[in-house]
Length: 184
Image 1 (cartoon, rainbow, N blue to C red):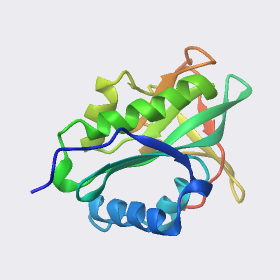
Image 2 (image 1 turned 90 degrees about the horizontal axis):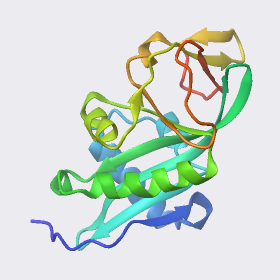
Image 3 (image 1 turned 180 degrees about the horizontal axis):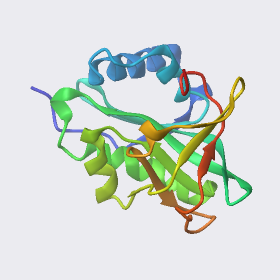
Image 4 (image 1 turned 45 degrees about the vertical axis):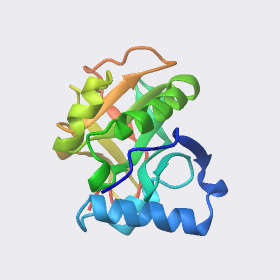
């Protein structure tokens, strides 16, 4: 049984996490996603700010926000893209996911034009309860091989959070920068 005593979410840049801390984050994500967490998924969450919550049993929750460039209404915006959010199985439904998201949202709201994430069915409830909204427009990525590629499978799982740029227009597409693993 896990102790409910937790610390406040700590934020740190990837560069400030020790190899042991990064190993603990990767282990949490591998376990939380039941083996459906790839090296590309891992890479997507590096290079930004991490929110970590520990309890008596170790790392209990994690999330990261990284910058992505997204073209919307003919303008390239800085998106705070939320990645790698997970809570250890024995600590779920205790508010730790919300604690991690509060820290990540603070960063998004103050440093980015808007926030974005791709949610699993299980995660969507957390995000919508915190004010994230399902994107109702088209989603594309800029592929180095094929140019602009529509991602219809992302259109029912992409959530956004207005920040410095204000509201987004779902009549206009979101065109995300390229990342390995986004388009086959």
